[in-house]
Length: 342
Image 1 (cartoon, rainbow, N blue to C red):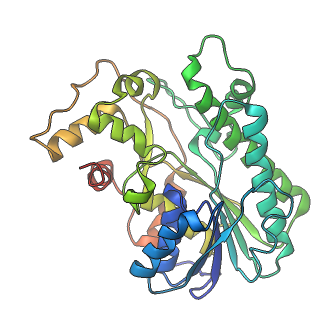
Image 2: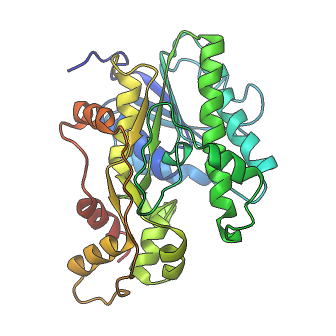
């Protein structure tokens, strides 16, 4: 087992702590005895999260701080004082104007690194990137990515929406541009400034699995897609626009962040959170098995498969260090997620 460089009892700063993955990151840290200081836009509106952790995670202390605008220079400087690690999960989710959305992601990420560099106690920073920062999913194509891959196509398509692409994918292309441009900017800053802390990035694919507080979080992020498949709402959009790709369990995603944060062996790495490929017929088949009395949309013809080759072995190794076993498989994640749908 590798050396733990940030030990339980330390305080970790987590942005976007009320989101799908941010909440799980906080939950897993608290479970392991780490105190968490979570950043949200509005503390009062997010008091439900404090209530949840106060009732369910008595192992360590959770507190919320307000950061209304992560693009303001120095916005994190006070909030990170006395912390030992920084997990930057917060990100804009797309939008329709790249001139607005992309600088929010980049400036928010750079503000995280600059704040960490000013706080001597911070040993590690982990950034939540995305699979889409390396490539768009491709159907029935043999292709690969590696540690140096970036989605250059996304940078072109985010700024100039292609005439041959549907207009309803514009937000997805802008999100891909945000993640690609932000991650590139953060690695560039690290190389140029050489701060004292270690920086790692986690690149998760489509997240399925447990929603920490579904009555408050709803069906966030990619869980909404799975909910469409469950109810039949917008399912044609899924089949036509959201093609086969890889998934990762929500808790596994959070645990990769924990591993990247605490283990000495993980240094300047991109951890590829790609568990296994799926298409919507796979999801529908699991639903039918779980809920035999419910009627679901019939299988789609010709969905195809994602044949990506991705270096995800290192991420699974880190995951084994944290939880003692490898990836959570698709059926288990979908079963856990569907509990919130019924």
